[in-house]
Length: 275
Image 1 (cartoon, rainbow, N blue to C red):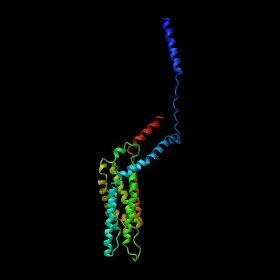
Image 2: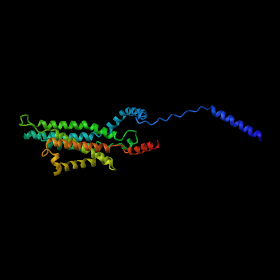
Image 3: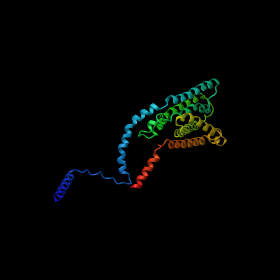
């Protein structure tokens, strides 16, 4: 019995000696949480670099999914209509009015409602790219096209005004502010519909809804005196339409935010309470 206990103690000592010879890796030190966010900034540096490298791939995806045919068709339809009306005005020796330009810009505004949706949303939602990148990039690509369309239509209207006309023509900055407000309202309507269960019908719902809202605000007696020039002065009409465009763009930014942001905030808040 003494021999068995002696052998057992010898084996235990040998096992302890072998365990002591095994190299042990020290765990990585835990970075203390600092208020200035220096540790978080060091961790976010590789993430920012990876996002920069992904920009060419994102640009290619955005350019391929952009509905160029719909946007260009709406812009060209309005310009063609205005060119025909300009030819008729030259024959009748009467210049075009800003009301004709407003009516000619409606197809471009309606086409803008089809620009926001992403046709590959189920695929882009599982990528690490924020969900607002594709629709925001579509809007950035559509902005120069709409600006060029507006410029062409204003040049067509100016071509029908005789050079020897008495007095000054009406200012165009209220018209530009109004067209910008129309575009902003349409984009906001498309962003709200795209966030609902009817995302597949974003353009078909947002285009008539935004045009109906614009027509109602334009012809309603309460708002007509602030939006139309006349009876509103050009300065008042410009300020009101600029305020409408600013509010619509703010609503668009809120609607295009990532749907998983509220979950990340909950996780971050739980981590702060834990530490």
